[in-house]
Image (cartoon, rainbow, N blue to C red; front, side, top):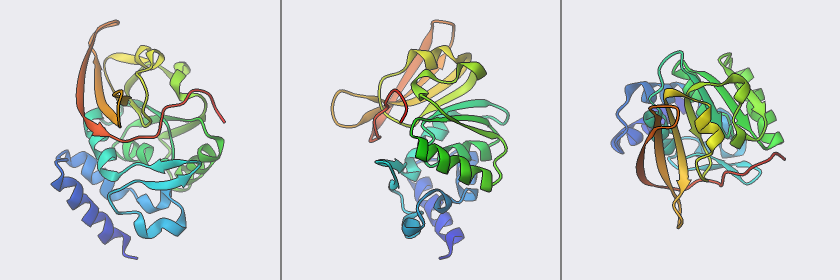
Length: 210
């Protein structure tokens, strides 16, 4: 398969849906999404929908990855915490944009797979941890940016680990079907500005490990 052409076509689709940050689009153009999913599903790698990666989890829809990354507004050198490594694809996008990424996965088999593929692809600016992501990684805090790739409520430990001036992006349960994307900007130790965006669908944010 001509993966490069398929990636270019996917970028065109994402752009047509309103993603305009060229840094995000360029990162997604460079990261090989098929490397993060089972080989049996490679023919679906560049379609704009989620794909199963095992353990009841998915690699997010490319548009959703682009939307969240654009909201996060990552700058080169930012220290970024990702809660929910999953396949490792989102972490790779952030690393491609020049971030120093700390990513946490609670499911051991996914942690092992993601760590392996990220190492094989040479992402030296990504550190992968097996832990309960709802507690963040306080030993490396504070973070310039935090991104959560599973839906739940905003977790206070994550807000506490965000720098003043930092941004947290997370899908939050809206009490009905789906989730509302929230962008929280920390403007003081206890002061935040929150912005809400349309509906999305995510796997649930779960405490603990397995």
